[in-house]
Image (tube, rainbow, N blue to C red; front, top):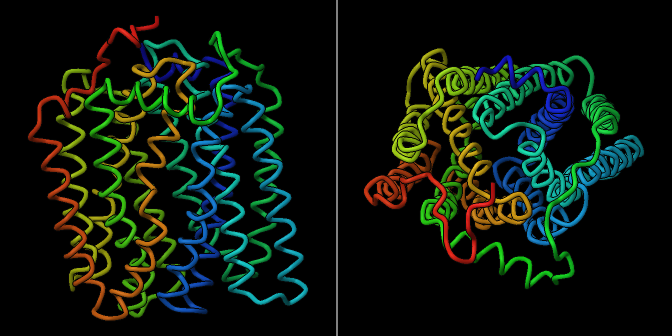
Length: 410
């Protein structure tokens, strides 16, 4: 099996191209509004921006997971693209008519967060339906490469558009990418969801997904670990614009920072596809890599030249790209098709549940102390959380555990 064989599947290829174009536009969107808000309102306003996104995103995730397990996933993703295009287009008009800048962008971030609550689980659940299980590692690797290529080019394009034009042009470009993505998704046929009963209410649907998660120690532990790990990681991300600013650098350096991290992730994703990690070693490699990522992030804030910072950004990206292929592949080949939307939503909720307060805390802590102190505190807790997952055997055994209620469905 090879990455070329996975890429030869036409519907998977179309899906990945659509997702790449969508992600490219999104990366331009987020890098541009993040820079504008951070420069206009400082660390606190930047914290409000991320909090607004997650406040729109989190409350809808569980409901969206239920929708994704009942309605055709391609259609959910397509409609989400069209709705996001409309929301961003309205925001452009608000800015052109001199609506207050920061409040408008906060509302925009909230709205985009709400729609992405549907698009993200729909896309994650759709990918395994478009490829044979034996090619899941390769498919997830290509997915990672394309996404990180988009994240690598997006910051460079976004900050350049800001430099030469303005925020409205960045947002208009984002609208275009959503429409192109929706057009490509239209060419992919609906994949039926194989389940007998779709009449359950939200409580029953989520209860079934949670019951499955509890039968898989590695999955339960991974969701719990990400719950705390991402809290501290988001505080680190809050510090990046101010880290750049502390070195007397500007928006272009911010874009380079993002592009180098994405380039590293692309390398890591490619390596994970060329040399897939065996199932029995997935958990061990995953926890080692994620612990090393925390240490790399600490070096971002050290008093070293910017080129040296970029070396650690690249290394963090390589490790992150590899581990995301490991996690997505484990999720893809271990979760039954009719549960994927809900389990992906539970995974997202676990990762994001504390994030609305983390940016506020991060912005406050950076203002009170400095970037290095904030990073040191965050990394200490991230390493502690990762070590727990590494030490417990059942947590690092990333393989399907059949149970009476959830026998393995082939």
